[in-house]
Image (cartoon, rainbow, N blue to C red):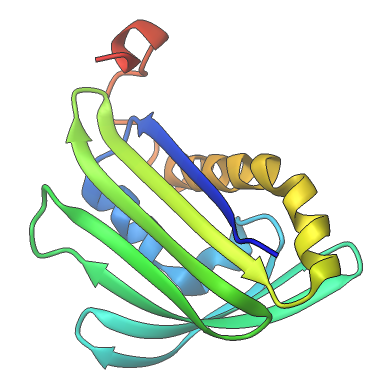
Length: 163
């Protein structure tokens, strides 16, 4: 088996700090994130490092995993969240979010790599993966609208996105 990888880059019409705070607020994930049934911070290891537990469910599958999350927020122009799985059904789990200022709001870069220990689960999720990640990023964007109201930056058109 090989790990499944996905990367997505998108301009979202909210401030980098707003989006960073939204993604960093793991306990709120079940309120808006598809397939997330529970989430909590188990403990803080340092001011910017936490151990998070997330439960996901889709169809007959229910899994809980634990990740070490590093919240890099000292430099407002280099906001980043790095996650590495440390317990659960994954042989490999890592993700990175970066949030960079952009004329249209924030350029987010999201990358995810995972490999389930179970071949059946890996095969099932791989078939749905690209759509699932797009729905997940869209859920974060919709949540930003719920929390922060109307975007504070103009919407990005395909012409401005190519900059």
